[in-house]
Image (cartoon, rainbow, N blue to C red; front, side):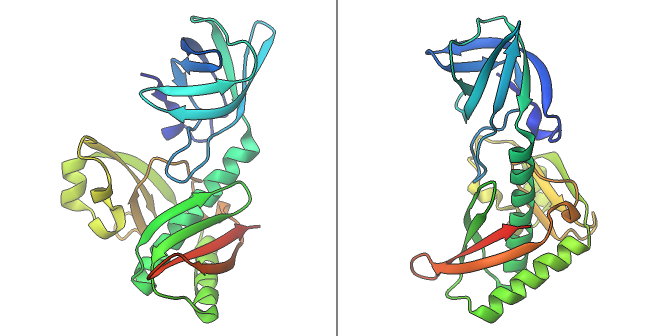
Length: 239
């Protein structure tokens, strides 16, 4: 199975690896990869693979039983040593938006008792769905102000893995939302923001994030829409 280096080395944008398998006429499985596959509301990375003067554009990345890189052109042969390069601007945007989403989820839970039910990130905007009847303009301004306060605080962001039983026994279940994970997952990756003793947020998440909230930049809440009975969607953009 491909080693998912993006889980730990989130700012490694160039790496060397070998082609482990080829599927069909456009899918490449690498021995290890820094390309993030679509999942958890975060879009896939794009970039290139290069070897022996040839270049293949990576246009999509999917995680099935293994991580598949969808490329343009004739695929490289199995065993080929390739250099992978991530589109850095796209990845950094996803990292900033994903970390901002964690701040928003924490604020909604703490100040509105609104649990996050879904989210979707893009390179230039994002939205989050939560269990709440209706936000008004004053609520949205409060949320925006609070998010920017936390950005200005430049809080540290960490990620680490825990045995699932230990995580369930020691972490806040409302924030981690471990109950949403399949029972087959026995090791969980936790993303934590703020002080280690009393973290602002502590969530099970396999996405990529910046290392401090100061890297997020200024947040602008762009509005809200109703998502069915007692559910709201909040949109936001980053400077």
